[in-house]
Every structure is written in structure tokens, then in C-alpha cells.
Length: 372
Image (cartoon, rainbow, N blue to C red; front, side):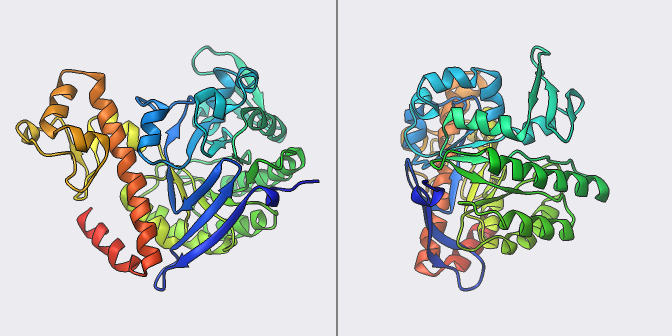
């Protein structure tokens, strides 16, 4: 009987001497991922505003699709008939799907959590649905991603201790059911650490999920409205309790500063919708912090979005031109800014990885943080 170990393998290539940062490789059925890595988010099987060729040209190694949205539209059966997500969206590198737990959590008044699973209403048409750990595994098996996530219960910030503890314990019971239902060894099932912002719960959760033999492990339940300092504290505290010889994934985090701090804590994988969401609202990343393209200072600025960037937008267009597009509501503005923002984060992680290998990560990361 094949196991995930026949298809997935993580190797640490280099470590930082003054932090928990590490550079590695993660072999999957659709290719090797060089870590640390940023994963663009293709919520509805498309990274917003971009074609898959444009995403590929940002040098992205892996993308994230959302199983909750795919389940509702277009439907898992249709995507399975198409040959799975890789064929469906013409992306032939690794894919990760999340379980839908966070999206269901965000529905708030439209869902009811029970021990068996979650009953919820589609916010668009009111149709009734139910997802259990077993159904989540079936959904993600039909979608065919390389990496799939356990079905978990995410709690809001702030949250009282009893609520956080109950949700964490239910997440662990669901985790057992996920592993029982999970049959496809060509898909790596990642457990998720919950526990809100209570250190003893995070420690307990990390130890419990680490007891499951998995190809990798994730930290969830952050970026839910908490202060940045608290998020950093919990990530730094939790990460060392996860196995060192497996990839660690911090879910839903993706500002340049968050990525740097996450790598310092020992995180290998990140995802966030912020790159494309910011772009649609006219914000772009630069080596000197975020900028807003609609600002008048860029009206006659014929330089690229970032002088150090070699993305398509920076090689071919100026700030003044993209500002014109944005102010005249041309969709191309959001496309160019999305290309840039994703490329910026992908390239940031590549440079961070190189600095770890070369042994100068601390200096490099400190310089970056001072600029941002």
C-alpha cells in the first residue's frame, strides 16, 4: 500500500545560525517546491485579474485554490470530470487546497457548527449545505490538489478561553476523522494547529497534530483581526513545537514584513489574497514600503513600480501610465499591479532563500525590514 512518503519528501538545505529560518525543498507529484515559498491564491480556480500564463511568468511555484468556493461553484464533480484542478485551470505545478474551514467560519450568522460537521447557507443564493471532515476529504480528493488541508474550526479574535479550547478539541476530533477518510497517498494531508491566542492551547495543539504522521503541518487561526505583535508572538511560540523535518505552513499571511518574520520563526510556506486585493485597490509593494498608484506624486513619474523589480509590469510600463489606467478605471491597471505584487512576493522569498543558503539571512532580513 503506497503512503505519502512515496510521493512527498522535504529536505532542509541550509539553516540560519541566528534564527529559525531554513531553506529547503519539498518534492510533490507535480514538482519540487523550493522553500520558503509564497503561494498566490486562486480562490475560484483563477488568480484574480491574471491568466495562468501570467501567474507562471511571476515564477510562482505553487498556487492555492479554495475548496469551499470550488464546491459551491463550479462543483467538484465537474472539476473531477475535467481531470482535476490541474487540467481544469491549466496549471501543472503543485496546487494546495484549503478545507473551507476558514470560509465557513467567516460566514458567522449563516452557519451552525455541530460535532458531526457544519451546516451553512450559501451567502449568494441561500442554498443549504453540510460539510463534515469526511465530506471535506472527498471534496478535496475530487479536486485533486497535491496538498490538502484538514477540516478545522477557526475562532475569531477576540475569543474567550473556553470557546478556543472547545474549538481546538473539536478540530482534533475532526482531524482523526480526516485521516481515517483520507485514502489518496498522492495527496499530502496537512493537520492544522488552532488554539486562538492562548499559548498553552497552541502548545497542546501543536503536540497533538504533530503526533499524526503527516507530510507537513500548518498553523491556522491567525490574521483574524488580531494586532500584528500578537500574531508574531503566537507564530514564534508555536512553530518550534512542530516537527523540524517537515514543512511548516502559516495560513493566510502575506505582507512582506509578515513573510520575513514568519521565515525567522521557521515557517516554510505562506499564502495570502493581499497581493491581488491590494492591487485591485491601487496599492503596490516596493523595496521601500507600500505605495498607492492613484497618488498625484506618480502623475509624471516615468520610472517602474519598483526599480529593483524585473516583473512584466516594471519592465514594460511606468508609474505614470499605470496611474492613468487606474484613474480611468481600466482593468489593465489591476492586472499590471497584480502581476507586480505577486512577482514581488515570490521574488522576495527567492532572495530570502538565497540569503539563508549564503549564510547572511540576518543581515539581509534586517535591511529589508528597515526599508519596509
